[in-house]
Image (cartoon, rainbow, N blue to C red):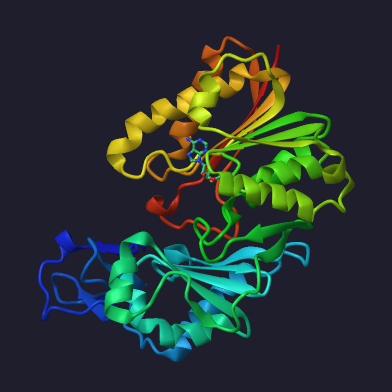
Amino acid sequence: MRAGHPWVFARSVREQNREGETGELAVIFDRNDRFLAVGLFDAGSPIRTRILHAGKPVIIDAAWWRRRAADALGRRQGLFDSRTTGWRRINGESDGWPGLVLDQYGETLVLKIYTAAWLPRLEEIVPILAAERRMVLRLSRNIQKTAAERFKINDGQLLRGEPPDGPVVFLENGLQFEADVLRGQKTGFFLDQRENRREAGNLAAGRGVLNLFSYTGGFSLYAAAGGASSVCSVDISELALAGARRNFALNQDKPGVARCPHETIQADVFDLLSENTARRFDLIVLDPPSLAKRETERAPALGAYAKLIAGAIARLNKNGILVAASCSAHVPAEEFFGLARETARRSGRKFTELKTTRHAPDHPATFAEAEYLKCVYLRLFQ
Ligand code: SAH
């Protein structure tokens, strides 16, 4: 805690002066009864307390919360111009708001909470976070039941402003995207991949592009706008692919997008890559969902990544580029990069590593467990 780690697990609490209710402030003392930290108590989670402040005692009141919100906003000052209206305002623990994420999509804010501790505090924090915008609440699956039964709060509930009268459209580097803020994954869009999408777009000119695990076509749109000769989006969800087609329709004013043939294939990528086909591409994006949700899944996840990367490499033309990402927190970045290099070596083809990337600046990660996103760019010769 003194070194800044934001979690206290239930098993490391030696003694409590009383039971404590979810959402209360817990004051933590060390074994010599010296003040250590203060955090949000969650009686139902193995992460029993999420630290808000460590060091010297402080008074946590509305002014303190307001300062914390302003600090998070300050860290993002100047990152985005008017061509990007979708970005993360608050990234949980790493911004001092444990278990809470706040994403902006144009005039709509989406507040997503991952601990029930925030439920009794919504009235207090919403006015501090919302400014003048509409705000939608999203709940992680594990707290939905508690929220409904104990607090009458539901996933997708409107916290402020008028309900959206259709899909929420926002801008990312001048491209228009829909976000399904009420039902979509995470808060409706994968804002964390913005920088990799832009980089892939920069590499796409004249290339035939395959976007594996495309969701609503984020990488596909950037590739088309960047001058790709064709784009193929693959996802297991037809709903996601319908979103990708709508996003292409939204951007027909961009010459690259208007010119680029876009094909959508509903398939399981693992099956698709195991098929024997002569079809090859010049740029392949591989952005699977988290394959290791817990530590015990790490080894199988590594096997799955190797399979995906090998399968993608086998479909790359001469001088083709592979953009391979991993969002599994239990697979460390260096391990993933090493695996990608090793798999490329095994393909027997000559290759070079163009670059590796980590978290986007609006998705800071200040402790190991918060680091999940990494991406490697390989160019395969021959
Ligand atoms: N690259 C996307 C985000 C990908 S999220 C973006 O930039 O927005 C992961 C996607 O993988 C989800 O859309 C999910 O539907 C899809 N998915 C999960 N398992 C899959 C599988 N086995 N085959 C194909 N798609 C899958």
